[in-house]
Amino acid sequence: MQATDTGDLVAAIAEVVNEKLRKLHVALRPATDADLRTCGLDSMGIVQLVLDIEIRFDLAIPDAQITLDNFSTIDRIAALIGPMLHAAGNQREVLP
Image 1 (cartoon, rainbow, N blue to C red):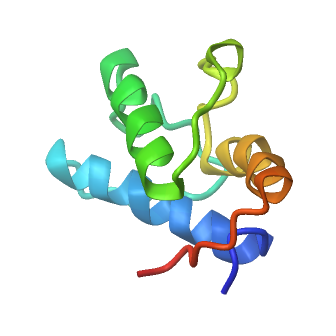
Image 2: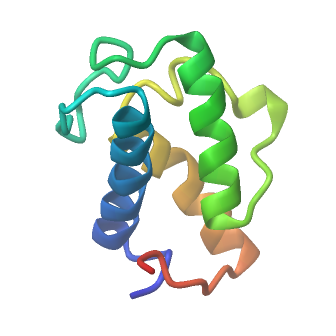
């Protein structure tokens, strides 16, 4: 499964989000269109999520793209990084 496959990408991002929520002792597994701020991630949690996403997908998200809007839902994160992965030719598998 390649990082450019949207379904796989969304699933991989959801796993990163769910792991972040587990670390915060939040049992919720949010829908892909759920606002992550209402699911237990505060602004610091979002910043940490950005770092986790960059590490997981081996990319650097431009500072101008790091906004609460772009990281408000799993779907929005996928919409942001999908083209970045495609442009970079990133062929890393999205699932371990």
